[in-house]
Image 1 (cartoon, rainbow, N blue to C red):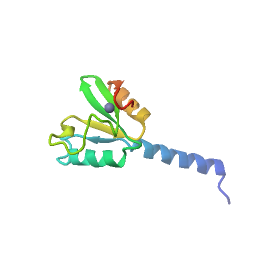
Image 2: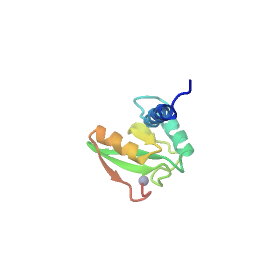
Image 3: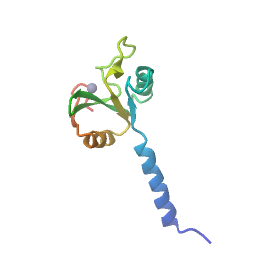
Image 4: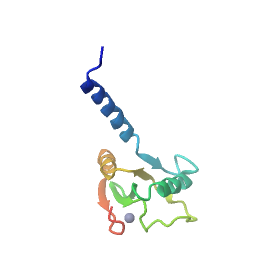
Length: 112
Ligand SMILES: [Zn+2]
């Protein structure tokens, strides 16, 4: 007996949604000793399609593109002393910020 196509499609769509929810990655020195290196690796892989949130103050985060000129590569200081929340969807990052009660500002230099 053949499966109705509609049911298969719905099933597939829910898998896609799960995957998208897992696309957010958080890099923080308190989570991993290699956070800074991992963050740089993530950025170089997502220069064209990545975004990240950087905390500014309590309850406020700044949205940047992965290739933002603020963060040159190969810095001696750890960029992940402050948490970096990364993803390929800026709307997902905004949702993350909303859930974490943080207001989002957008960076003027990379026009995120
Ligand atoms: Zn920026």
